[in-house]
Image (cartoon, rainbow, N blue to C red; front, top):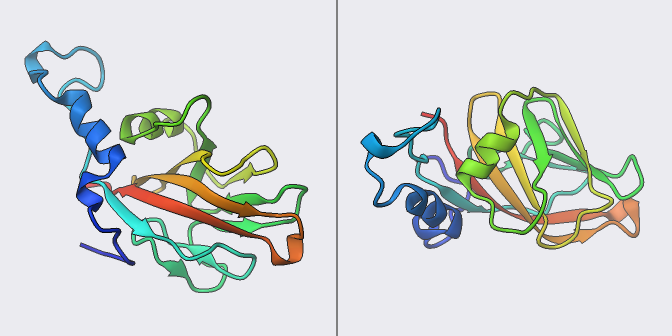
Length: 165
């Protein structure tokens, strides 16, 4: 599989466990609704380079994009800074932490990019769902946001990706 720098234990990450637990012990024949019988793809967790105004992030691999040509870009054009993308929908997860594949799939369903997410109200622990136009779904969790001096602002995130088939 493609890999920027996989986190050790990526297959046992909390979002992967949540996705597995959501269908554990429930036979497909007893499930109801549009997601009946579906299971989450295997989760891949990555170490992500600091996002700055000079780089970007490739969702599928977790690697740094060349210059500003990756899927997700961090910038400080507005107060509090923002994430932007030409290839992906970006949505902040409301409420308590604990999002996984199903949450991100549902929050980003039926929406289209390009997209921008203001980060003024975001802090460490904020969860952000991403759906790439390829169908890949990702969960970004902010670890550190430094935006007090926009010229040297950065964003440190954990990234879990559920690649599309």
